[in-house]
Image 1 (cartoon, rainbow, N blue to C red):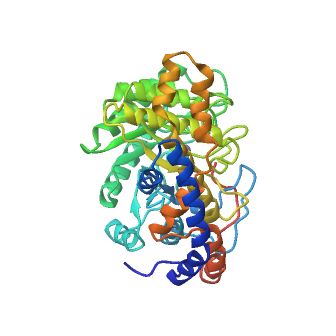
Image 2: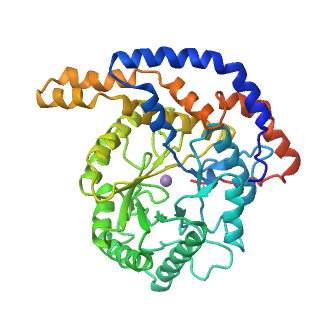
Image 3: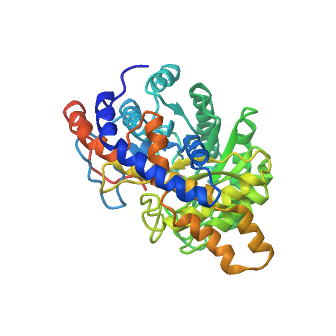
Length: 430
Ligand SMILES: [Mn+2]
């Protein structure tokens, strides 16, 4: 392994300063959990086995429809993004994989890129195709859609791009292709709502046919944006119907921000799982729409309830239940490394809290129609501060007890500001 971006000595020094307090807190929580019949070390072992991927594009500042305000030292290419992702993994120890996006992350040698990532302690997660914007020199525009476009040559170009992503992913060690299309309409009557779905299904079937045996195609639905009247794969219903029509390797991916306000997302999770079609998540949070705010910053309880359904699903797996977890956020006003460290911790906390739920008590209360006790079974777990479990797992894996503190002390970003060229202004990712 090459040298990692953050000094081992810095992490060791800070951990030495925090260790006694952490051991105190861990022991106290351990005694509390033991009274409820829970072995804290078993929960810590589960937490140590949990991971979530980070998106390559999340290493940069996103922006809104209006503007992007870059910070000095932002990454400008996939190599610099990998380096930033290595910082997140080195300090937090829950994000060992990066999800690349093409053509944004294109290079000439993917074998070398895979080795470069491995030397930084990273692997690759799902590959993401991009048919929602035009690239320089592209033969056909996506202005009127991609997989669902009226024009057959445009649809074929979008199919070919997705197949190229599979080929790249094979070289990187990925086994998932995530497909989100911006296809849709802004006016009633702009496109036939039925025939546009027909076109999507026909094109998606060509991509599906190119999947290697051990690959999955993850369909990501989104209710609106950039199309504001209708989208082709608008909701989990459209997504599961498309996945069922495509075949067993097609699964549904739930981005927490891609629903109408107040929709019961944990119930969608349970429904998709019931039919063996839950393929993965994009974690973020929202107040209004697809805000792409930091995970758990607005509604951490919802995130916990999602993980509670995942814990139930684990007890009753269907069709090789193995959801792919990824952070999908747009960091507009924070340092992206800090946001991803914070979000990965929040996501892992919700996973740990769901693991604390007394399932026997919950199920008994449900059987007895004892609503209050069923609710309390969830409440007790949600109200438990699991931070010492995460910090202990992180320290034991070589990470930092206080990851944000170590990151700031490392002055990583200001060092990169000296080395990296400035990124351009302009609108960000939507
Ligand atoms: Mn997403």
